[in-house]
Image 1: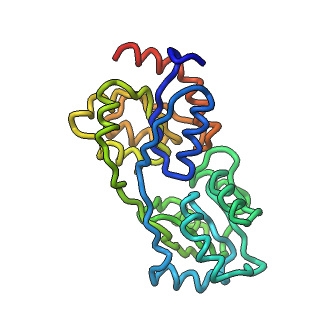
Image 2: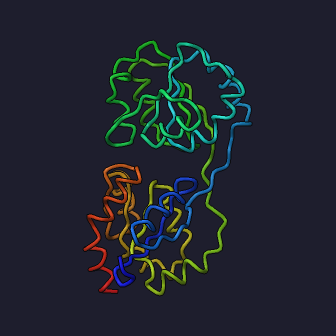
Image 3: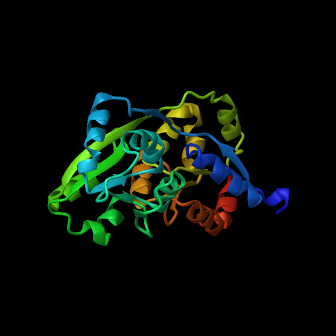
Length: 264
């Protein structure tokens, strides 16, 4: 791909996945600018988490809601439970979370194959009839309550383990603001609603008219709805949060991105 056809994409996905996505975009011949829109503060040393961890062996399932839930908690789980109880099974909200578990040495994790969200987990055969089962959900502070509520409504006993909290990153924004104001960003990728919120907060009010008109790629209809409510104008939805799905969306929308770029 020649330079004249090169797009510049702002990737807001936090590391390690964010750097991987940037590398994949560059491998396709485009430019990627990485601005992680969140930083994560582990909470696994907190008394509430440690107390719940002591009783993990009583659970039937441990359900991880995101890769970050794995990264934040897996060392503490391994330390407390070097040998897992035989009845304990792992589940993940998506393939990316299952991959993080696999990389940590836990190969068998049930997860949805299509969309990566709470609704898809609830459609899995393993979670359709959970009356009397004990399910531990490892998540971030302030996460969606849809999954624990629905599983509890189906008769499961739910224990929520808060493994991390999301915070606004401390980053020098001047280079990013300059690039945006010079019309140097052709699209933005956000993989969570918190990421969308934080990107709006990180850029100055003066930059908002340009940011809101820059195409935004998100990974669910729910995030699209929320991003639209914030004021973003052009929002496209990848089929899920995987890197192949995001790259596929970029390919599909490339002509439209160029059309918008030429009007700037």
